[in-house]
Image (tube, rainbow, N blue to C red; front, side, top):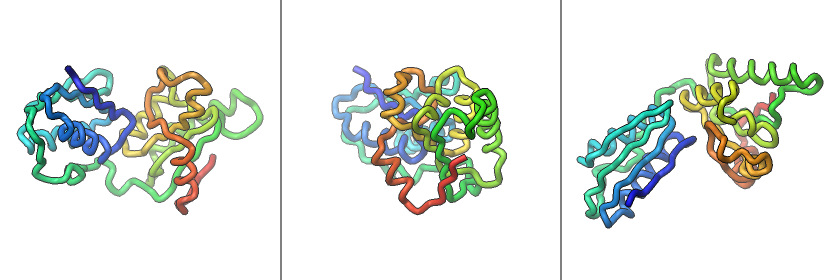
Length: 205
């Protein structure tokens, strides 16, 4: 039997925490597969497993990493806390602000122009001296993360640079695109409300 730990859309330390939890809960020696879409997080989990002498293999396809762990079926006691293995590749670039997108368009007026402007914005953000900590998408902005779109590829690039991408779950369900999401963590309105009221600077293009 194989246990799947899906960490797509998550940034360190969450993949490490989820892997550690799965290992501690796995008392029957079943195979564990950890799915990650961030190269840095994959390296961190690999370091964690190597340091704890756990046999594993990695398969990568189109930027998706599947780490297969052959659990020993014994009580797992890691040498260090999983979070201590969290090394990031974007040190110094993360700013103290959020970007909140409420539409798949930027601005109001001409729809075609709005799409062009939004695409330009997402392509420009990686070049900023300070990246946003997170991009929160709700209403039609969640469709920007659909597979096969230019905007989704831009969001993947930002995610790989350490920007968390958060999608409103109600909005994803409304548009019926849950199975078509390329990148991002699907969350709820409580989380979004907490982030918007946390005191951090919010940018709404």
